[in-house]
Each structure stands twice: as structure tokens, then as C-alpha cells.
Length: 409
Ligand code: DWN
Picture: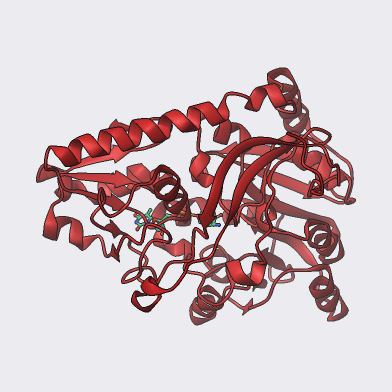
């Protein structure tokens, strides 16, 4: 069904084709306090559509960024050791490959709690973090990472440039897909980046999303789902160039895009664009079966959990993740099936999952109450979580992985 008034976030085309409609959903990171349980909860359409002109997969609804990312944003990157390891590697690789030193400047957009820039501080390389989320920005300052609590926009970049700041390296992990004014964002990068500088941008890879049916990574914070093809077209239309690219396993499969101001694509870019062409990732056929696959995950999971419940089993979940909110609310997994969710992030403990309103506690509750099963909502960190929770398993607890189809682990 063609969309009338909507335009593609990248190329402005009106030719947006629905790929998956998840209906009206609460905001994935809008965790509720006890007091808010009796209050009405906002819900917004959540529909993913493909642009027939530039092949960008995107959601059709834009929730104001101030609503999504500011006052009570509960996500702190440092609660995952795997993410810290990954980010340190990213930082050290950039420092080495760009020969950064005390005269350089590294700027990270969406720097959160300093999880990555702390590696630059350790190496005494001047750096600056920018993040609109008050809590994480404060936490970053506390560990000595210079951070400005603000959105990164073209105007903001102009202000920095007028203060004489130019970045040798700009890092933007898990933010390009979140930005409503993507043109302004990229204009800001062009302004702030030195002529010979590099922007290292990580974003979930649409190919892994579709091939592994990671539909729960679709939520209102994620406006775009990039392929190398759609990212290349967006960057090119905004005076930036995809010069190298890597597929990386983080967050269920992501791309690391190396972006510059000169058009010098390397073999890795040409190879991946070729692969995508061969697989038809820029055409609707590639997305046709996705909705049906999502439907079977939903029915398979709810059926299995209901069976366990009927057998008298107690079920909990691990990871009050944004993707977890999509999964439980889309699949209708409520308090009748899942008793509680656990999460290491102390800012999430004591709150409730949006929509389903399942209580969130610390991981110690798993051993305290020893539920028979634990559904891992943060499946992208399943290995780390299962290793960490060996005692729970040694006492007979069983883990359930929901994606790409449920299995007992
Ligand atoms: O883009 C985004 C990605 C990068 O992160 C954001 N918009 C929001 C967020 O998405 P998410 O919440 O789905 O991300 P994670 O990183 O998969 O969330 C994992 C959750 O699990 C966090 O709340 C931390 C928690 N966790 C834990 O309690 N113990 C994670 C690990 C590894 C653990 O051992």
C-alpha cells in the first residue's frame, strides 16, 4: 500500500512500501515508575517501510527526540562488558590508524556515560562527548570524560567550529539511525570534521535484521535501518563519502562505516555494495517474507511460554532492553507469563517495562527466586549473560533465546 503524505527520510521520495506493521506500541525505553502505573501511557504507530527509490528501510512515525532521549533516558552503555570491550577496541584502532596524539581532537556524538571516550582520556588524547541524555552525560563527566549535554545539530557544530574546534576523528555509534534531522546531523559532521578527518559510524545492519529476523530491534528510537547501499546514497547526497566499511557482530550485527570528505571508496565498500546488489537488498522482494516470519516467531514463543506456564513453571526474563519491550509488547507476553525482568542497570531496577508493566529487579533475584526458565530479551549479549549466570543454570535454571526462533539454551 503506497503511503500518501510521508516522505523518505533520506531521499524525500513518496514511494514508501510497508514491510512490517507492529501496530501502536509504547516507547521502548519509557520505563514506568510505581506512581506511573495508574496513568495512561502514550503509544505510537510502529511501522517499517522501504523506500523504493533509495532502498532505505525506515519507520514512518517520528517521535520528538526530546521525548525519547532526554530526562529519564535509562540506557547506560557501561553495563555490558562485551560492549565495553568492543568500544575499547574501536577506540584503540582509531587512535593507532589515525596516529592521534595530544594535539588531536576526538569527538563522540551520543557518547552516553563515557563508555568509549574514557579510552581516549586514558591515552591523554583530547576528546569531547556530546549526548542529550542528562543521566548518562552526568555519569561521563563524573569519570572525567568532558561531555556537553546537548543534541548534535548543524547549529551546534557551527558553534564548536566558531570556538576553533575541528575534529580529527568523529565517532557516532548507534545514533545515525536515531536522528530525525539527518541532513542537519550530516551537515554538522561536515562542519566539524577536518578535511582529512574520518567519521567512524556504527549502525545496526539491515541485512542481519532481516536474515535473523531481529524484528524487536524495530522501535521508535530507531528511525532508519541501514544497508551499505542506503547509507552510501544518504552520505553522498549530503557531501560525505563511504570510504571503508566493516561488518561487526555487536547488537545482532552492525556496520562500521568509515566516512570522509573525499570520495575514495576502497575495495571493502565496492565488495559489500556488490554483495547487496547480488542479494537484492535494495529491492522489495528481499523483504517480502519478513512479516510472515515475525508472525511465526510471535505465535511460536507465546505458545511455548503458555505451555510452560500450564505445566506450573515459573518464568522470568533477562535484560530490560528496548528490544525486549518491542518483543514482549508485540507478542503480548504479559505478567501472566513473565513474573519479573532482571537487569544490571541500577537506573532500570525498581521500574516497570513499558506496556506490559512487568517489574524490573537486579539479577540477584534470579538466584533468590530461581524461576524454572529465563527468557533472554537482551539476546545480543546472550553469551555474556549466560556465563555470568552460571550459578542459576547450575541450580537447574534454563535459558530461552527468542530470536531468530525460540530455543532452550
Ligand atoms: O540503539 C540503541 C542500542 C544500542 O541500545 C539504543 N537506542 C537503546 C539500546 O537498545 P537495547 O536497550 O535493546 O540495548 P542492549 O544493549 O541490548 O540492552 C541490554 C540490556 O541488558 C541493558 O539494559 C543492560 C542489560 N544487561 C545486563 O543487565 N546484564 C546487559 C548485559 C550484557 C548484562 O550482562
